[in-house]
Image (cartoon, rainbow, N blue to C red; front, side, top):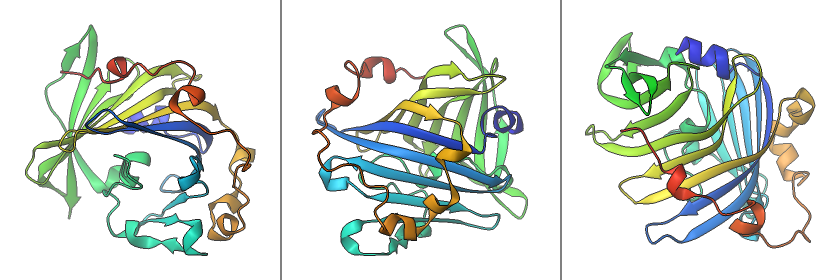
Amino acid sequence: MQEVYQRHEQFPYIYEEQVMVLIDSAGNRDTRKLRRYSRLDSADSGRYLLLFDAPPEVRGVGLLTTIQPEKIQAGIYLPAYGPRLIESLGQNQADTFLGTDFSVNDLIPEPLDKYHFERVQDERVDDVNYFVLDVYNKQAGTKINPAIKRHYIRQDNYYIIRTDTFDRHGRLHKQQTHHDLKPLGGTMWRADMILMEDLKARHKTLIKISRRVFSRDYVPEELFTLDWLVKNQHMPPKDEEPMDATSVIKGEIDLSRATEVLH
């Protein structure tokens, strides 16, 4: 896991433009356009901001997350509710937000010192070798059963391709898979498509990254404040054309390809 972080999670300033597609059990789709800002201040502290630009019902909504050595704080800014963050997310970062299948924990790096990792039997799928790690909550230096997650990590580039999340009874609840991997120089890789499936609710959320910039200039400190959100500096033009899945994503998303997972 230390190698995973050293290779892929160390760049401190990242800006992304994304499209998020929500798919319910009947196959209906709800498409959203958003931006993501990431700024790491040190090895154990950072700030993350998700801003929704479209459709109109979520325009201007922001999810602000701050990581500190002792705690993680997260809150949602809803323009209609005035100049405040709704802090309910701060109670449980494992809860999903805004109708998606992602939680705050799914979108931020996993603090290695807060978990116990146990290597289990390696697997080989489609001629690719994987490390397989079970993840446990850690208390007083010992693991707490049962495992809460299982990571599948490619052995050639140390990238986490799949993460299974279990409920409190140890049953598979959610599955996150990464697709369209690309090398970005050195040992760093990134996935341009991330799929989260809630296997109980039969609901899926697909994130497609259409643009990624590694630059301090794109993630200035003032972005990660309620004051900046309240001033509506982040709001996109109101005359922006209506958005749908085909207008934002060039071509049809091949969900059959995206839902390929390791067995």
